[in-house]
Amino acid sequence: MFPAFTISDAYRRSVGGLLEIAGYGPHEAAWDRLEHADLRLRWYAPLTADALPVLLVPAPIKRPYIFDLLRSVSVVRRLIKAEFAVYLYEWPEEQECKSDLESSISSLRLAAETIATRHRGQSILVGHSLGGTLAAIAASIGPHLVSKLVLVEAPLKFGEHTGALGPLVRSAPTLPPDPVPGSLLDLSSVAAAPEEFVIGPYSDSCASVLDPEALAIHLAVIRWSLDEFAPSGLLIRDVIQLLYREDQFARNELHVLGRSARSDSLGKIPVAAIVDHTSRVVPSSSVLEVLKDPLIFSYQPEVGVALQHVGPLVGRRAQREIWPKLINWMRGR
Image 1 (spheres, helix red, strand yellow):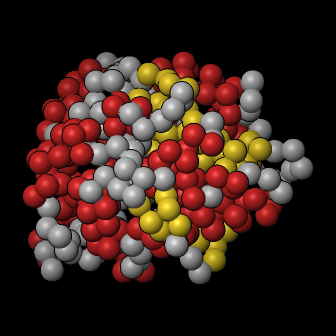
Image 2 (cartoon, one colour):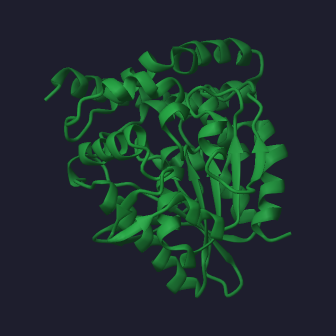
């Protein structure tokens, strides 16, 4: 199904490969892998008795190294330097993946349980975009496994708070293709918010051209944006129907793994949120309307990030001004 998009996926990956050959690929820290039948994690630091574990959850659409893009703007490296035990969740890719929302939450819960066993304690969950949404759902049904929750541009409330993606979600088919071609998702995003996914990157490239560091980050983000895979159609179906259209999590009506996944259960966990008050892709209200007394960090759009949606992870100012304060909070200071 959709052979044109499948060809487009292959073409985009080839362009990304050329950018990597040109030197604009990720510069990742060394990592080992923990792998089970329903779970795959990267881990970056030796096990120590007092290291606080952190589980990073990327969006289940593109590959996870946006958390570890370049040495100068790496969330992973910053957390390692702060002496956390860092784990990065890897979503299953392509034909190997037939997961829906429930199995995805089950896998995240298994990751938290695995880390709890290794460290004899709770972990801090840090989720970006839809990865943060799924991390919040997992935390709501297993708060005993989570010491703190950090949401980075991660929507929790939909309906009228969906933002630019609203018309697209309302018109999406009930049964999307399985798997969903990455290029189809990209085209849909461009149609929904061209100012974010077309005009923004073009403007940022012009603004970055005289700043070598900004241009390097910009091109690395573009390379990452081309490094796509086809996520499970079952998961996309559930996200569209249960979250975007029916808003079940925010309404405390979502049921997964035989439990009620209630957004108000997040009140049992200390929560911090990085929000962009100018974003139409993830309006700040879609994050803050659900949370009770979160610690809020406001991201200011900046030059050199290509896509402002990932700016809180790779932006130089965000790395300099937000993450040190956030890490102090994560450590309980």
